[in-house]
Length: 198
Length: 263
Image (cartoon, chains in turn red, yellow):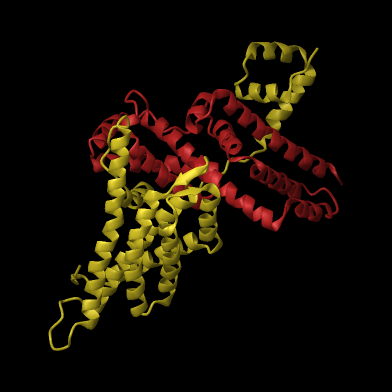
């Protein structure tokens, strides 16, 4: 997991930014932007959404500087804020997607029908099918499941950190991760059956 | 012997099981559960880690340049414990942010029009056509950016709960309407129907937001969102802002060295 901590300079910059020193906050932004973008992109898997998350995360951080505990790492704190912003973006996006799907109908079955018509188990095609199924499974997750899973599996955040980032209790965070994994495995199970079909 | 459930296996894989020692002991003895755990791990390893697009070394500076105008509209950092004061300060700040565009628009549009309609008998102030265009581009670009921020707030507002208070957004929208009208008319006179059309669409939405009740149900808020989304307004505003900024940049680059721009 990439972390944005261990920077002594941050402590000084945060203290200065708290007094209204814009230049100090600029230093924090310039230092941490790339890390925040990476996290945002992994959660949203969308360039434009990730950029929105970066902006919102720094804005929220700026507004909440007084809540930052000096003994904590600014990078970790910012990481949680960014995760929360990405979760908000995902929720908004999924709401929009639901409306679109309701008007257009499911696409997945059509894709499978075309793929199954291919004669022979082509490995490359199967690999694509697996990724396509995984993508479909990600789309079927709730924003919470997807966020919790990404933070746990791809970002390596602990359940305690995820709970704080997404405003959940620990058992809800664990459940969200598990439900996400189950959906992925169900999708892969379908894909594996398909792969095995000559 | 009871086999481990899928949930126990998944939590164990992540190191989040409540009794890891007991699960380990079971796995030691049970080949079927070991195989099931291996299958969980194999499935999880099939998931690709999305590689973010590369960002240049100056990415932090770019983020800062986009963020800075928004921070400038924020109140100075105040104690979080003092929530009412913080809210009041934010509201005041938003009022300032809302009034500012109108004042700036009025002065810039005046400057623009002075250059075009100054009586021939009297020498106009030294505002060249290029400078007028540049002034207008900067102003319209800033206006589109502020409008985009408002649209984003509306799209993301009120994800939970029964009612959403949009009074601050309404004040914001109300004042953007005034500035928008001035820019739309000026842009139309300047012969840019593309920008004028986006501003016209934006104006209709701003008026609608400003005239709604300040407390909206989620369904009512959804109506506004759908209106923003169905007409692709946010996207069009973003695209237009980008185009205006690019044009502004081109103008800057083609400006002669030492050329003076009246602002």
